[in-house]
Image (cartoon, rainbow, N blue to C red; front, side):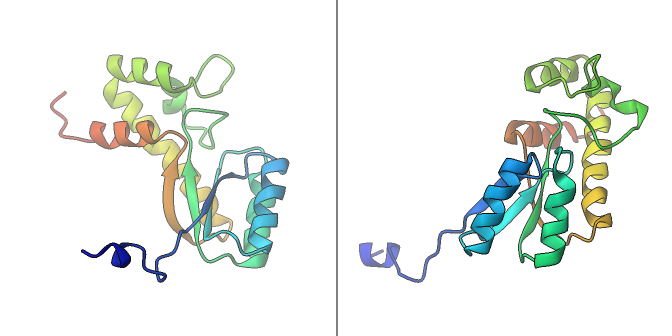
Length: 156
């Protein structure tokens, strides 16, 4: 392949803003970039403290590429299902990645099921708010990959 073909002017860099909905400050920065047409998309943190204003902005302004930013390592859950207790500390917050992994080692099925319940609740929250979800990422890619690894045959 010729070097000039690798640097074709038709190639584009797509920027996606993460953590949209985490705080009013992050929302304001993302909205400035959206208004300036500098972003190809956003990923909404459905359990963020400012998720509702983020969704309201997206519904009003109809951004083309809106994803979900799955999070089961920081903050509080969307789901109230008791099965999530395995993911939470005594304050009702997610335990964080190191503790989550340790809990999975002890109770892989329970943790995997709780992750599925919470991810589904986060997705359903955005869908119910009128968001057309086009992509997904996670607060910790390792959590996402770990979970897909865990969803293997029930021979554990």
